[in-house]
Length: 638
Ligand code: ATP
Ligand code: MG
Image: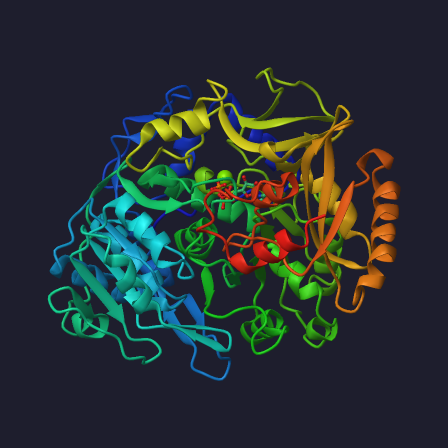
């Protein structure tokens, strides 16, 4: 019987644990790694290099992460539900796998990969809807030591080809099509188009999901169900080195060309498990639901690896929050008795804009903990979530982290740490954040603001960018040698709680006053007419930079041109009351949508180009959700 991992239970224990993790990180992380299944223990806990970016954790150890996600639980939790799948259409069949069943499916598909010539170290791209075969395939790759690269199944053929070629993948898993609310999308067709430009791919495995006809290319394409039919349900796990790559995942592309972030086996495993258990405080019989797509890092760490490593029951949802209606999330929570719910501010804001009855008609009694990730959550959204979803009894963990950090870095621990809306809170044990001046000097004390950096390695940190270590070094370790640079700006309040105030590149400097985008947007969003907003700076003769605000209004609050002056004046009033005259926008443009990445983040760099009048070169827009929005914004420019 494996030892169970310890968990922090009180704030005093958090403080004590934090102190220990900083005073003797190697001893701390050795202890935290102890209860996992290792084929061989490590020689060295940490080899640190925050200058060249060559950091290693648990060097010399041998393991397989799937033995820790699955095999390790079989004795005690074999019949416990590991995965619950909720389909797009609530009237169709759910799927539930116990740990034992999931183990068998993973082994079976691992054998399919082996039968198709996949070897340890090969890259396998997964361009898949949110269906159980995706979860199974991710774990099957890990089982045999193949490196998975999940590509969000909303990306275009060009974006797929870029990622497949960058990773030099040999095998691609996809499906005939996918369901997205009322729509069906021909996934395989997009893959076919992409693969015309991907010579490295020699095998495509196709899941039959919606029953659409597809073209199967002779010699290259095979059906999942046919391959699985005769494959054995047992598959010994490949022995991996602690630092063997586990996956490549591309960042969202909010600030530029996406980076192929590489995570390795042992450190990522320890980090995903540790952060999951402590932040969400999931109990043995809980149902846990993370709404992120597995195509994003949140889906990797907190839909799959974190929950399975901790032996939790994780829910996977195929659909969207607004289908069949805007009550779907809440319906799913009641239906499955979800106890812990983790989503993104963008989803909350979009649901807030719909009639309140959508949420009030569900009991939501099972909920105990709520979480958010991906962007700063503005106060209005925080209170709405807290009041109408959490019924004022559920703590909200606002989790700050990045694809590159592998797991949550700054967050409250649910029910343990103090909560403050718009503040992510305190660092997790093992995380040593600092605020730097632009010149790279550490800013001491509280009630301060600066560039957020991390001054000591943590197990889940990025190891490299695929095929191009120099890019990783320059991006993360180059700006301030000796620190991991996050690219985000933050404030530490008088009690040491961190608030993310926006990307460093987006800081607006108005007559010498520096503003993070999040703080101005937070103020604008307080206005009753506003659903969502994005602000950027643009060159201004007198002030250095002026503030340009793009605002989406609530349905009915700005129906015509003649409503606009009144709405704009009211927004300005709100900002002046919330922050002061200095933050008054110079221009307000009312828009019907904002340019967002497919993970729902606002791409302010595009808005900045619009505000600057430089729309001829918008940079990499392959990760943009709806390019049509950009044209509309350009047309309406002030
Ligand atoms: P790229 O690096 O390609 O520009 P990206 O930074 O959007 O894309 P991700 O790794 O998906 O890619 O997102 C990480 C970023 O998301 C963080 O750096 C931060 O700006 C933002 N973020 C995530 N969680 C939070 C949070 N809880 N509060 C504030 N910001 C957050
Ligand atoms: Mg980033």
